[in-house]
Image (tube, helix red, strand yellow):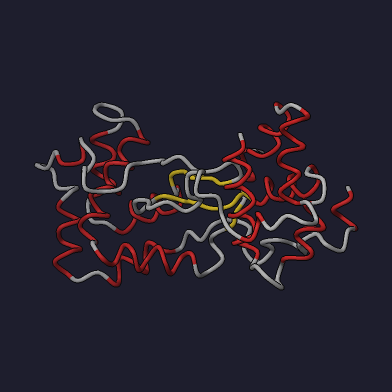
Length: 238
């Protein structure tokens, strides 16, 4: 493809870490005060039916995000929680599938944990965003949210999106506020990242985008900001 040889292509975007950071649960758990750990563990006690419903004070699951951005259950974090939170494995066994399906169990558990963890939740999300976990790839799904949308667009709509990368256009210096945010407030246990496959696909498909990327990154924008800006503008035009 043109992208393999073109000087403006991001070199191995995300080679350092092609999956979102998923080793965070142990660190978070270790940082919690004993009383908070005890409150989280109490969710899994035999008598408790708290996990049958989500905590309404937590951010809702799977919020809308722009094209090119993934938001999903962080299965690695769920696995770590099963190993670390006392009795959670047993609760998982007792509850699924009799009372809840797998996804609902985790949405509910992480919503309660988010509220119990309180301000540490924001610190944790910030730390993860700072460690390259803003980009990732769903290898097993072979998904490319950009290509799926692009294939359905009319030529005039494609031209409109390509204008974002026009030589005279400054649109990509800022995100579009008409799109859902790329990184909304999410509960613990949620993986939220820019899909590298979608980004590479956009570079190959959108006229002028490779060159625009070359002129803006890293001189004016970092890699993450470039993609947040492009994908939010594209989404706003759909």
